[in-house]
Image (tube, rainbow, N blue to C red; front, side, top):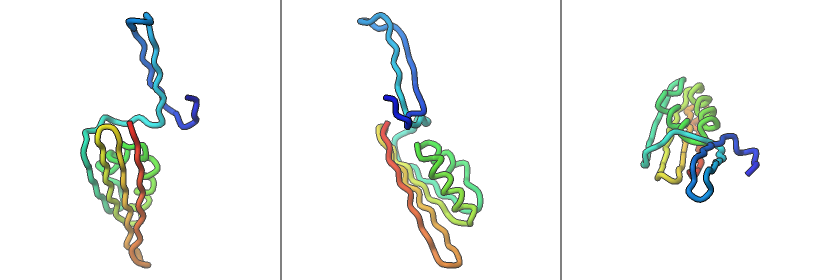
Length: 116
């Protein structure tokens, strides 16, 4: 239970038919918004991250880490394509960072998976 990865806790208490009163604690690494199942894709190019891309990244446990990489790529004039898959129980995020620079095209792919 006492892992340093757990930075969030949910607490509920109330009546219980067998024990009188009960208190439940749920520890988590990340807490995000409720998402509808399905696939969502967002692309962005230019120098700033779009609100739509930021919202998609923030809806996953990898938002901060992947968002920093995406923002850096956009500042360099690159492109970002993000795809989030969610089935209601587990999710997958794939972020493709592409830059067409003086030395040619470079691509970096970031991937992450999580379960609720």
